[in-house]
Image (cartoon, rainbow, N blue to C red; front, side, top):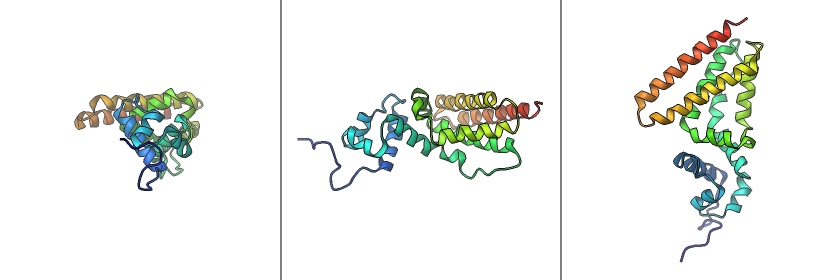
Length: 187
């Protein structure tokens, strides 16, 4: 007979970190289609309702995952006199995170309520930096973010081919540098 689901055995309760680890694994494995509260609960051996205590609903789970995955993009960024350098660093890190976990990016696109926390901070920081360089910061933000998303998501096609992945990353940086140079030369 199978054990009923609920609290894990041996007094080992499920933690927020366990939930996030498992959810990220499910998201990466399943091309994004397999991340549901029910599938996550099944994987963890608990009831779906027990997850809500730790992470809320699916949008809350996606916010928590994006906070974890994209946090590196903001780590150690210091206000500098050169917004171009800071933008390049921010977007390079963000691009890398999108490439590592593309299904998370797609899930956030599909769940607008998940756009908060670190993803919002990245967007706000980028917008503020662009405002120092152009009179069209929102338009340039959208161009640069869309470029990071498109190029980062393209890395899925070359998974397992490190040379091709490296080439795509180098192409992204070259294009980013050209975009930023174009932005810098605008009146």
